[in-house]
Image (cartoon, rainbow, N blue to C red; front, side):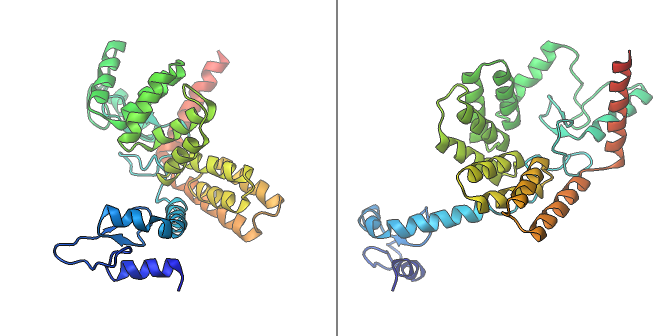
Length: 308
């Protein structure tokens, strides 16, 4: 009987994998937190059994990690617009609301601006209805209020702001706090900092950890980067898996990567076709007449400026 099978039997009979003690009223067994294959009645038994269990534990832990890593996210890390409830597009046209840290789509932001202009109304946040700040002092007040409230979105935004100024130490501190609060974007930003040595020493272990955590949280750009890492490491199969998932979230660069993989014979035609369909479906899901009108308005505005 294999070692792994013995471990599973031990867990299944609720007995300590080391001493064989059964779980009764005065003996509580704790599972191995890394693999969930075995249980122990004490730290001493866990330590004593570690040499026997180590290989199976490492193997199962890697399998569990991959199951989590390659699970298809329900949506991107941006989620849905809180106003129209449609999936948020992956571009940079989304509107960040300073007062409540919400992010709304360009369509809802444009519709609210039109409503206020037509009705000659006071400008207010379309989500929380707070008055739109009219000065830098008011903007700073809103920003600090959200940070003091431990708002993870406000934290990662402040980190991004400090990073753009070159204040990498402060940026790192804000991103770290945001990660502790469960922010997906902050994981991605930390992976960038570790990779490009922005205020920290290069650490590929940290790069991979934060990139994986961001990808698990639905970040398609992080997922795409994981594909690049795997491709450069010579594992085209894992790279293609990552790019297929990112493509299904509407990520354009991952489609380009898959096309390149197809040319090299790393993905078959049917898989590529399926990825193209899911990519298009994801992009289509983010479209609406309201968002199209907003895009047309901003394009007209840009053309007018360029023509002056």
